[in-house]
Amino acid sequence: MNAPAGTQSIIRTINILKAVADRREIGWRLTDLAAHCGLGKSTTYRIVACLCSERMLQQRPDDRRYIPGQLLYELALALPSYAAFKDAAHPGLEQLSKRLGGIAFLYLRSGEEAVCIDRVGDAAVPAITGVGTRRLLSESTFGISMLFAMPRQERELLLAANRRDPHAAKGERAAAYRRILQRSRRCGFGLNEGDITQGTTGIAVPVVDRFKRPIASIGVMVPSEKCGADRRPRVLALLRETALALAADSAFSVAAT
Image 1 (cartoon, one colour):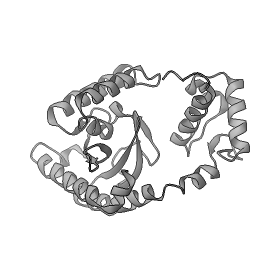
Image 2: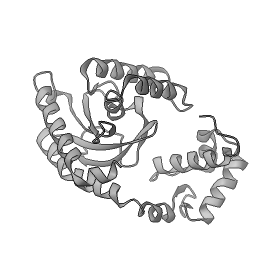
Image 3: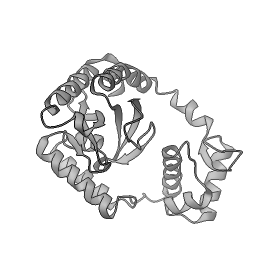
Image 4: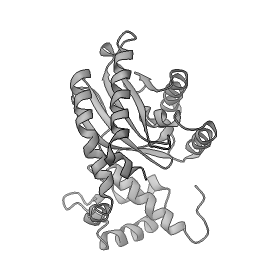
């Protein structure tokens, strides 16, 4: 993304905050964070030092890695409707996980990306996604389900932006996402048939607001033997039922404004 004149430092700071939030448990060494954000080490140090002084970041005492700071939590308190949205969705995720025998997820659209805001279920199902994980819309089953609920022009613009992103997947991983995208286009919902993790199937549907805009996605990751072609209609029906119930919830109406 090209930064407007005079805003380059702000964009750099936002990118650092997003990167740290995405790895809130592992944290970042300064050198790795600089490389990930495409910045020089000295520039990165100046920014993170300022963020630490303002408590937006902190350094973990034992390994000196950078992790989110308390001020981020304090600022998030200004958006109670999003916490209410997550709380309203949680019982539905629990039911999906219990009935389908996998992990249920709630993703929120975040511009050109999707971020996981809740996860419920069996840790035995292979899944590298946790709360706070951020992915390009075209690089997750959940984001893809939102893409295909958008008008075609908007979708194509976002896909083009994702392809230009410096952190877009390369090689075999990029090919896997293209397969998911093409399959989902045919099906009309997000469908990952073991493209990323062999033996695990992911299905996701969008949650739309009253203007029919997709702002979230609900989905599951289950062992592939539990989601064959004969069982898929039932899984899809349960997901759509849960998404419709959430869209009708008053908490969602507040979050979507």
